[in-house]
Amino acid sequence: MAKKLVIKVTAGADAPERCSQAFTVAAVAVASGVEVSLWLTGESAWFALPGRAAEFELSHAAPLPDLIESVQSAGRITLCTQCAARRGIAEEDVLEGVRIAGAQVFVSEAMADDAQALVY
Image 1 (cartoon, rainbow, N blue to C red):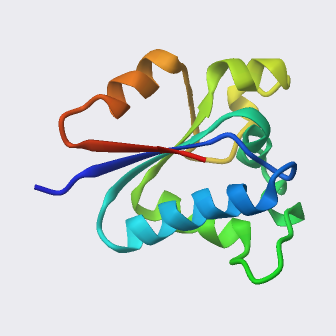
Image 2 (cartoon, one colour):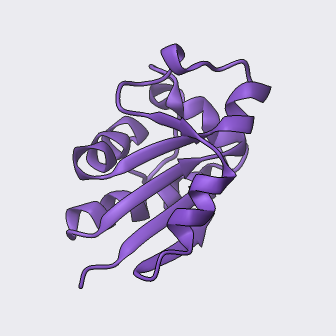
């Protein structure tokens, strides 16, 4: 049985290597056929907005927009409800396909029998 990978990324431009690692692991997992749920929390919340990922730069790393596209091709991206509210981000503001959900949904996904959770 295939496992599900639940990844919470808390870092954004404030910690670019940690941020990039989370998105890279999510994209590689999707490409490997793993079911992926990527959660944007903290400063990574900004990447739920159109155009924001294109502003992210890290040498020797895949472009963030490409990684997001890879994850969305067969996985799910979720923006934390509280993180969105603190930043004034509404559902109509986010990239197509990004949902906004809270801690209850994250805990439910992370605690599933077939799930592995990672936090960056």
